[in-house]
Length: 233
Image (cartoon, rainbow, N blue to C red; front, side):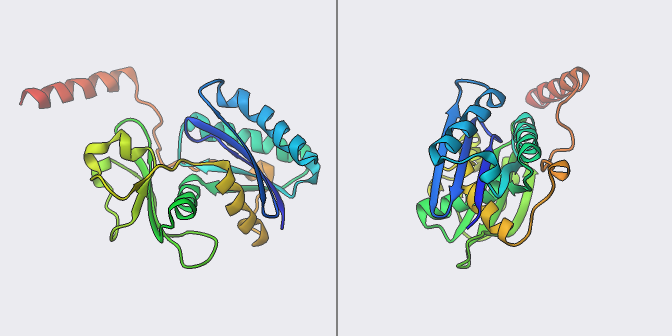
């Protein structure tokens, strides 16, 4: 089994994991420091607990998104730096894949709808099934849409903070509290590493589903005016 160092910072929760065989050492940080400040100390802690150095790892994995624009850039940049320093390959892992695996592991779900709050009235989402292998199979590929436009097939178990952020769009029941975590990033990365699905540090890239990251002030004023007009109609 490969030794995988994994980083996940695509949401408000930052985590780091070291996978070695069946053992997973993890650290989590939330709200105390910015992700860029918290990740490297967590990396040092998991390596120290395992009693190994960075160059003893086989690869560095990171949650490539979708998720917070700043968060996925942070994870990618730190993973690149560690990979350069250790002479290691990089394994990007889709955050929604990791959420689906966590939901499967924690709740036994055979089909999962992962829904992550994308802000600006939108969600990132994808639907998966588990066929007995270690990796979730995407039934509906990762997408960005309004909550009301999330149209799953069948009745999967839904998970993620997009459900509570837009509760009016998602009926109650069959929901699981799951967020992207480095533990599942590491586990999926181990599968991908064994399959040769790695990239060089220079080629590692975040996954962006939103082409436009922010609106201009003029666009925001126009949007506010349009909403006001709709309210008065």
